Length: 197
Image (cartoon, rainbow, N blue to C red):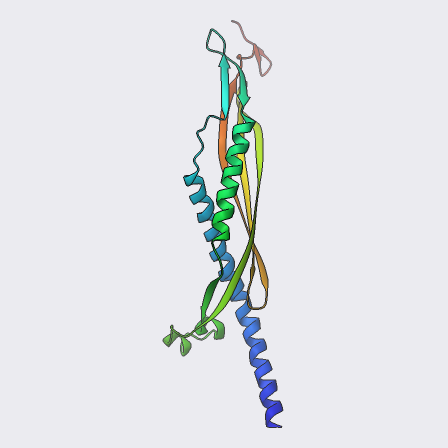
């Protein structure tokens, strides 16, 4: 009888700990991993700076822009180098621990808050992937002006195995590679009014 009561009590305590501990651990691990990923991508971007020579502009004898050519080969080389650096850094994360104080688990700052060193730790084992997309866009930037931009969009996704659950942390990071302000002649008619020139 005493053994069965002890087993039931142990199961109840473990169940309570799982219900209370798992969401806390997941939240802490997700935030830590997101911060780590942003730092990794920023560090890799600083280590592999791009020259900014992804666009070549041709002008006529009056200085007016006649064409703009985007160097897709240089962009792809930069993309490949950056993806490789980010992947290598993410692979170096390895497993780590997440610690939660007993005061957070039991919602008791009076008793357990007096002992901040009492903590439960959980091992986190991350598995990662990094993808990228090159995104170009154009938008109106004024009268007869268009802003053309090329951006590198990185998506780092890490799946972490925790005590009970598995969480997926996704970080999107955008790097501006090139921006061009293209402007043409001032139109002869604007808002239906004739322009006398």
